[in-house]
Length: 110
Length: 114
Image 1 (cartoon, rainbow over the protein chains, first blue to last red):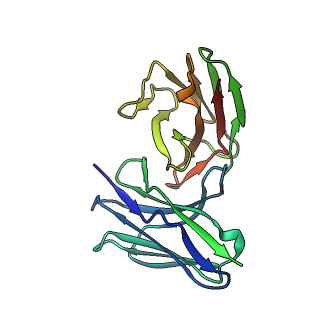
Image 2 (cartoon, rainbow over the protein chains, first blue to last red):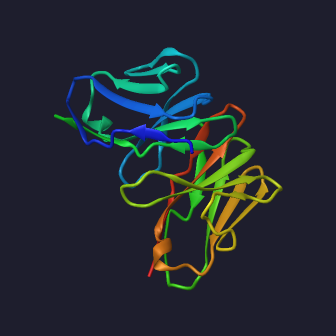
Image 3 (cartoon, rainbow over the protein chains, first blue to last red):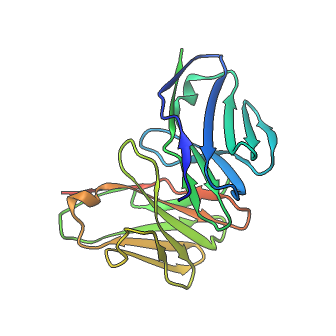
């Protein structure tokens, strides 16, 4: 069974600091990796996608992928209170279906 | 990103009634649409995969006769919860998938069954 693991948190980070979110996955043939942000009562919003090993940067967000270690992470620089949300890691393997982690609840402390 | 809409955004119904939820891709053609359910403080659980013009593929444990899915066009999929019961109360979210490999989520429909 394909699994995606995340630390459920809550993770508390001071405003302006770097928030680091981690995710591991079990299916070695996974090809596509996504980070979604979900505010309470809302649906998930795509933050980043990453497909190859290394780093991918978009504004204050950096996704890191290490397929050998089956590990993907999301770094949020200069954290803002508006970044407080649940972050979902999602993995796609072969077909179109996504497998989601349970999410990490992030709180940015002003 | 692409836009996916859902209607209604929330619905309250009596036990035993049926509820239809619409999912539309507004600015792209979704070859595939997915239906998820999310209970409080839990992650998204995939219910079914819907392809235009064909029968939906349901995940294990999801009753296909209770959750009827119709994908009549490349921009519209519907989920009908038949004979709803209080345990069906949840946040139902659809997503559209297009050729760029990314899923775009609708805003969700909160169903409360009394």
